[in-house]
Amino acid sequence: MLVEGAVLDADGPRPAYVRFAGSKVLEVGRLGTDSTRGRLRRVRGIVIPAPVNGHTHLGDAVSVREPPAGPVEQLVGAPQSYKFRLLAGTPAPAKRSAIRRAVRRMGREGVAAFLDFREEGVAGVRLLRRAIDGLPVRGFVFGRPLQRPVESRELATLLEVADGVGLSSGREEPEAVRRAIVRACRARHKRFALHASEAVREAPEVYLDPRPDLLVHLARATPDDLAAVRDDGVAVAVCPRSNALFGRQPDLGAMERLGLRVLLGTDNAMLHAPSIWAELQFAYAASRLVGRPVSAAFLARAALVEPWRWLGLPAAARVAPGSPVPPLVLRLPPEDPAYQVATRATEQVIVRPRPAPRRSRA
Ligand SMILES: [Zn+2]
Image 1: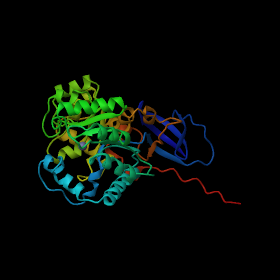
Image 2: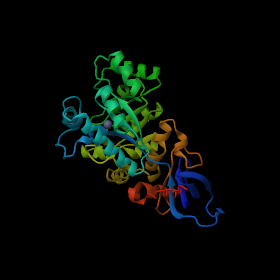
Image 3: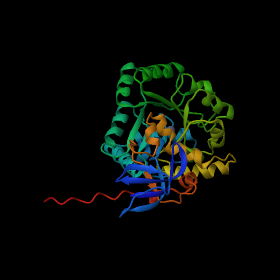
Image 4: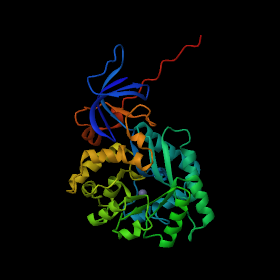
């Protein structure tokens, strides 16, 4: 297949052609210089790194009814909320199949990886790993130790099976707990992430000390708080649709202006489908609704580039031969790739490589 149009990746947007063999990139070149002859499938479109869903709670996919109205803590706060009662009352096989369905859906939408905050301790992490076994979407799982004070054996086991720890929030966990968890994460080269300033503003000290690898939300953070996050070099995962359901929005305009490293996530799977395209479109529109507009380029980076950098896989954020993750081809006008990706991309515009012709067995 030969895609003529544009590439949008870690190096920004540019007119280009990309020659593929199956899903593999063979060559990227300047538009108009391609010398390929003969019968080749030609597509006009945009080639992008496969997106990453930067924040999910896929266990919540067990919920299929409209959740009750109320503040976010009553809905998803540990340990007595609607969500935790639902998780506790759902048998493991039902949880596994709900998670598997959600991840398959993400795969159909072209998502190649997700960062999940998994509840229910060691067992919860194991359950998710088993649920997605064999699927072509990579799950990075942040578990939560259940014992308080932190029990070192439980934490060690958790860090054997998880990619890191994802805490509910800094203000719900005493400093000693956070420090013990960070120490264990550092010792095992695992990541430490937590929700911050979601329903109420928290002082940056609460979530920046000890220093996390990733913060989630910052919907109530002030521009000064965001500057402190930037100065500490901490990345942020934002979830605009989830925040909107509780009457707030992250200040994406300020995050862009201040130069924060931002990932885009779809948050609790009980609130809406884990669709990165829906999240992009909502984020773009909502930033204008609240009068703090963000650029399409910044949002596209949050879905396609920053998460791969955060995961330590920067090569996956580039469309080039040898890319460790196959890029996506979108049948969209290539003149303004970031705008197209942020406002018009859906599962329907993905061009799939045709399967190789079957060889007859002679
Ligand atoms: Zn979350």
